[in-house]
Length: 438
Image (cartoon, rainbow, N blue to C red; front, side):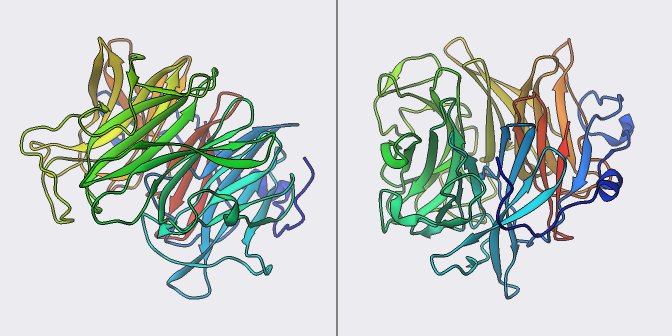
């Protein structure tokens, strides 16, 4: 893969050595969790050498992609500051295997940089790399028509290709994207801006044909809106989807976190047991991970204080889904606790991962052959805010700081092909973005 044509910063070897240092260990009494891990953290932290806009914060996004060529490449989609305090300019920060960074701005058809209004929790970018090396970015949509940018070839400019998507003119929100083993892409998003319902749709990028198509409306129901959380593709090419339900038209507090699997070989959808499901699924027919609990109500009041789901992420143990999510129960004192879930006996088992206080709407989950599931979460306060939890042999969850000394308040995590967790760490208070590897 050749160097991009647009290059604004190359970190020198000396500067990189100063930046790329192992973070210090964190003591057990500073790490929240039921059984804090006192071992030294393996995280290596590096500051991305570009200014980040404070609007670069979300829970649903997929802002990280990786690629193994002559080494590991990392792509961070993020918002740079715009021309005014209320705007941002989406871009990709690319890290080469030698540690050099490049900036790839998103360009409109006239060659000018794309710029959009800030809208925290909505106008944030997702990125993926297809099997031909093209980068695809979905940016800054809150019930807006497609804002989609991609390269024509590896290293090319990232330009507007919104006209290539189906459902032209529809309001699109929460685009999440993942690369399949063969190089195709799958994209999920909420589609429509109606007050009665807003369904979830799945799309596919055919890498060989360089074309997008609609797979299906996978979820939708009257008086309900779908909130995509995550998707991933297993080695057999099956697409695993994670999503929440809310009372239409929209709300910050959702319910009935659900799972769905799509098999391109058959065109069918199924639950976690493999049982076929008709689409679009509804709240009544979904494979529900977190059911309604005592006092939980369907409300679109953003002042609602009852039980609710807010943010979730997905990984796979082979083809078995493992889920991390935040849930506010009636007895949590208003805090969103962190839970882990997995299929079991035709249903789902749920375990409390962290219940030590309020958390931010940001999660990550990966799977490691030694640790099992690693669940990343962000606390609402503290000198260190990003933590990673793993289970000990007795099944207890313990946590330690995943980014000591970095005041990140959001996160995303992607596991690369070398089996390392790549951490995307925005610090919105200081307009900084950090790269971590562990």
